[in-house]
Length: 273
Image 1: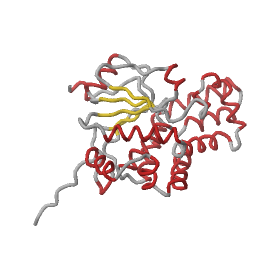
Image 2: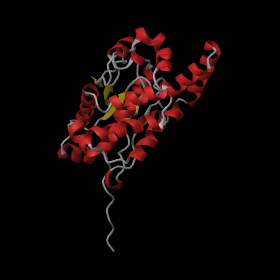
Image 3: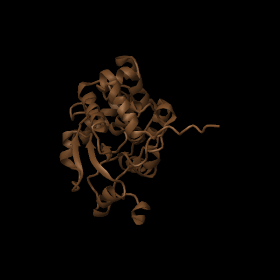
Image 4: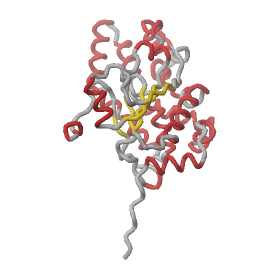
C-alpha cells in the first residue's frame, strides 16, 4: 500500500480529492471520500488498480451526455458501481454533439457575446433546467444513500463545467462558502495550464485566427464569471442556497444533516480548564 500512496492516476485529468475544504461550522470535509475528475475512458490497468486500492472508489457518476458516453465510454472496473446522470443533453449543449463539433467554434464565435456568454448561459442551465436539476439531485441522493461510506467519484469530460457545478452543489450542501467553492473550481486551470497553452498555440498556427484561439481558450478555461452565473441563476430561481438545496435538489433537512455528519470531520473537542 505504501507504493500506491505515492502515486496518482496517469490517465485521468483534473482528478482531485475534496478532502480538507472547510464546511459547516468550520468542519473540514473528510479526505478520501469525495472525488471529482475528467472522463475515465482511457484508464490503464495501473490507474484502475489505484482507484480501488489507493483511493477506495466504490461508485462512479458520469455526468456526460449520451453521445459522449457512446464515443468514450467509462472503463468498467470490477467492484465499482456506475451511474449515469447526464446534466445536459446533446441538444442543450452542442459542444458535446459529435456531429456539430466541427462547426462548434464558428457557432460560438457568432453567439452574441462570444464564448464567455455561451458558457455563462450553459452554467445557468445547469442549475435551472429540469434535466440538470434531476442529474445533480441524483448525485446528492447517491451521497445520502452511501451507507457504507465508500468513496465516490463524479466526472464529465474535462472535469470543469458539469463536474464543477455538481461539485458546487455537493459543497453547498456541506455548508462550504461560495468563495471556497470558487477556489476549488478555479483549480481546474492549474491542471490544464500547459495543455491549454499548447492548444491555443496550435489553433492560432493552424487556423491562422487569433479569434478562434481566444474563443477556444475561453471554452477550456475556468472563469469566476461562469460559476457566478450559476450562483446568480439559482438565487433568482430558488431565492438562495437553501431554496436550491430543498426545492431544486430535493434535499430534506434530515438529508443535509446526514450528509454533513457523514462527509465532514467531527468538531474538535473543547478542552476543559
